[in-house]
Image (cartoon, rainbow, N blue to C red; front, side, top):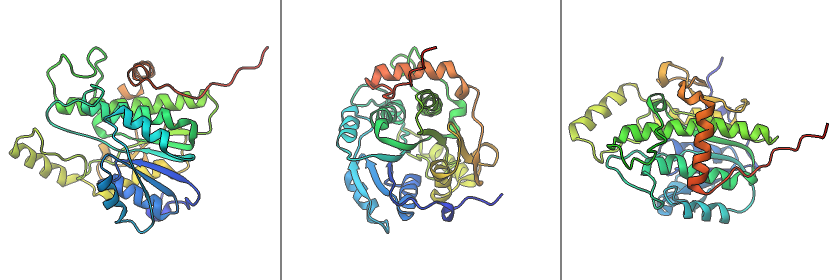
Length: 301
């Protein structure tokens, strides 16, 4: 099988793609590649100045719109003000921080941004989405777990890595539940997910980390990491390849080491349908957004 590369992307002329977190790293590469292959690309970014700077690096014009996933009022405003239909939504933005922080709505910042913000955005845009929703997860989901009694870390001792992996597990569970809901509604839209492997651009932050520990972590990641161009390939594959709904794409080497994009496995926790349904229901309540498509009415017998 030949390795997927940027030259394998189809002609996307006439399609509109919305990409979150597209000011740097794999998000920037993903948005640039979609634009270069003809798509009208909307950079949905927290900082419009950084978005405009990113847009200036692209050979084709792209649109920059403000979107703060850590503020549900911003998510609603973005969805309300975005004109026209959307063919492709790439939920790429991700956050990994040290100390406990909270969103404008009181959620733990990583869970609120990585999960709740994208969950609300997807539901609000879904009536206008025509082809595909891609959720960017992480190999870290494999060590993630959900504590429904304290999703927002209000009682537990806060652990930043555990909070991050919880949010990435939530991403995969919701991507799978979204596909089930789309199928039941008879929608042609599909939900896929992808992870970039171990990437040197993967949210390497110093906040809250001891200096020597951060340097050691960065060194170890650097031994096996892909660059941003390689890390973006699984996302682009999940966004454009002929795949069934609920496909999960990543580098084809063990545990996401550098490799060609291909369908990959996920943890047993990420395959738990009952947990996915529960998370969806809880997320609907917390974000005050609902799956907007009705299932077809069965014919009378």
